[in-house]
Image (tube, rainbow, N blue to C red; front, top):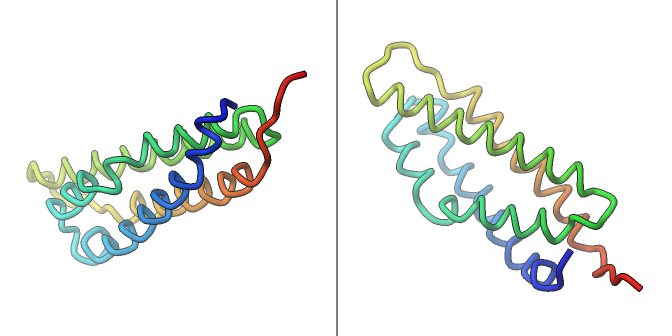
Length: 131
């Protein structure tokens, strides 16, 4: 990992934690009311607009650590779930009937929390220097 990403990891972790809070605030719109427009808008507001960039900072910061593959895997799962949630919201907005977002929402929240758990452990490791 390069030093820049390792140093930026603490800031990226804070942003990811804010994303988790934002997703939690979105729960009613996604699960209880199937408010497709609100979900679509929430995904496109900060800090969620920055989630990919911050996740990649953490992935790059941990790429030489023991959790590198796990970090990549958790990131890929999160992105897949988030895109699924976005897709369901789009279908609902276009008028498709019986679109439920609860499973996608739950998967997105779980995947981001799983990524955060691994990322926090990876960020604690000191920078590895080649000799």
